[in-house]
Length: 252
Ligand SMILES: Cc1cc2nc3c(=O)[nH]c(=O)nc-3n(C[C@H](O)[C@H](O)[C@H](O)COP(=O)(O)O)c2cc1C
Ligand code: SF4
Ligand code: SF4
Image (tube, rainbow, N blue to C red; front, side):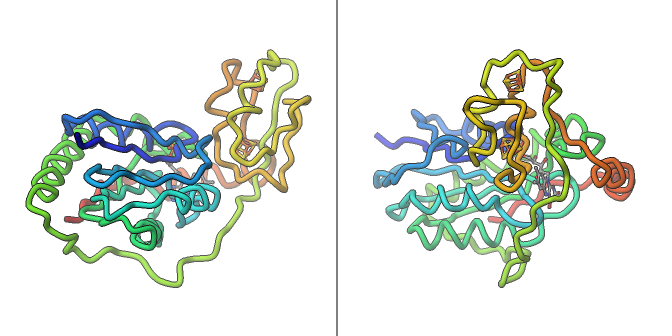
């Protein structure tokens, strides 16, 4: 019996949401590899199908997510590759995701770039994916089903360049408000970079931190946030420059 394997890295949960929408169109049992905490070698069984979602971080797929994805071998599994971005730019992320999947013996049959609420600049793409996005993503998933059944290859050209843009860590501070923290340690377990010390959730090692947003998203007390002069200066400028709605793109 074929299984659907969902593979994603989703610090603020919107990439997971898009992967779930696509996957719900497949009437298969499913299995989840959440790369925020899944960091093991794995081989996908022959006959399974993979839906792989990554957020765009500065025009790339996140470095840690890439390293974890590289440990999963495809076994010629048909794969749907999705990058999810915050209404600014995709740059080379979709080309990169497809390259990694092909190198790992996945058979990429379809791809998409979807738009979601920006996880750093929260005034951008509020409420997305919205009903219009969901409708388009469902239509795409139905076409993916047909493609997998007919064993067609990915034919569309994918926008993006090789070599990919260089990795860039954003210069913003990630802070914790000690007066709000309830010392539940959820952020410590969520952090994929081990940047929050086990014994001190108030602290963040900014040399290790990728600014991924997982700790901010998971904190039940809203104690963690972006901060600092660079962030405060960039926020209005970025939100103004990226206010125009972009649409998801699908490649078959
Ligand atoms: C470190 C970082 C870098 C980002 N870089 C980009 C970018 O280059 N282009 C863009 O449109 N959105 C960018 N975003 C926004 C995310 O791609 C977007 O919000 C995405 O939906 C986050 O997925 P998640 O909810 O699964 O974490 C960035 C977000 C973070 C945290
Ligand atoms: S400390 Fe940095 S790397 Fe760790 S979860 Fe928070 S934003 Fe992500
Ligand atoms: S998740 Fe929030 S409340 Fe819990 S330890 Fe971290 S900062 Fe404190």
